[in-house]
Structure formats: C-alpha cells, structure tokens
Length: 161
Image 1 (cartoon, rainbow, N blue to C red):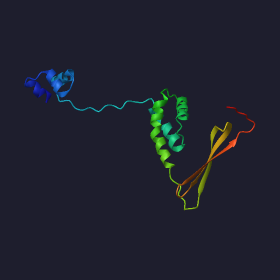
Image 2 (cartoon, helix red, strand yellow):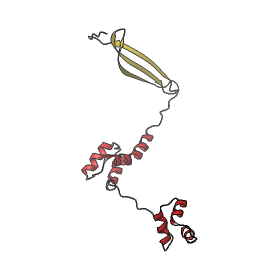
Image 3 (cartoon, rainbow, N blue to C red):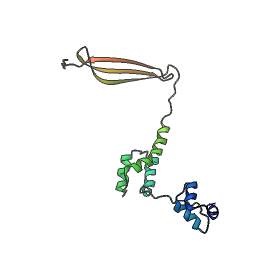
Image 4 (cartoon, helix red, strand yellow):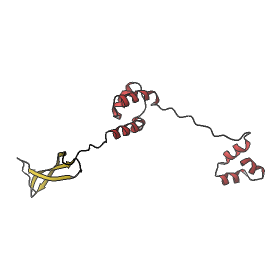
C-alpha cells in the first residue's frame, strides 16, 4: 500500500503523517524488494533461567516460598541477579499456594466457638495508666462475633498528668 501511494505521487513525509509512521520507516518499505513480514522476537534470557529448576523443586516439593531464603540459596549456586526479579517470579506460585489454605472450616450450629485475647496497649483513664485488652468470641457456624474490652491497672507504676 505504501509503494502504491508513493507511485501515485504522494511524498514520503505525507505518507508518514497519514500513517503516523516515521519517515525512515516509510522509506524502508518503499525501498524493500519484498513486503515486510512480522517477525517473532526472541524471548530475552533472564539471569534467573539457570536456577528455575532449583526454585521449582524448593517451592513445589519443599514448600519454601520465602523470597529471601530462596535468594540466599541460589546466590550460593552462583546467581548474580537481584531480588526483585526473583520475587516477581515466585509471586504466582506463592499466590496459588495461599489459595489452597483458604478453605473454610464448616461446623454445625452450636458445635464450635473460637476465643481470642488481644492486648491493645496502654491508655490513660482518669489520670491512671492502664492496660487495655480485647476479648473476641467467634461462632463457627454463623461467624457472629462477640467483643468485649477489659482494662486493668498497671501495678507499681505511678503516672501523673
């Protein structure tokens, strides 16, 4: 098509503007003896490629998904790359592994309740320093939660405002 319009008298610059191409590209197509074909790019080699078998073995057979640990291991094998490329590579494997463990544990009504305590830290109440804790009970069947906050004085500490 470029050759046809050029033969009809359209300038290289006009063709380039019309097709939003560089003038050098238009000139290349005009001077080419055969029509250009789309060429596949070669996939760039990664510094990580020689170590992928080791990584697969550690992740899929050993269950190791810790990026820092895997980085240390492959560095001992001669890896000279950075950790970002490694972490990007192991992320899909790690995400897939996490999905395996997110299965809900189902129970019948009244069969199970989980209870947890959490220390929230210290607060000042009426000029006294006290610890604040939270109690949470979660019913297994309905996932309903009951929460209660508790506080107690910190002994042998004086605090003035």
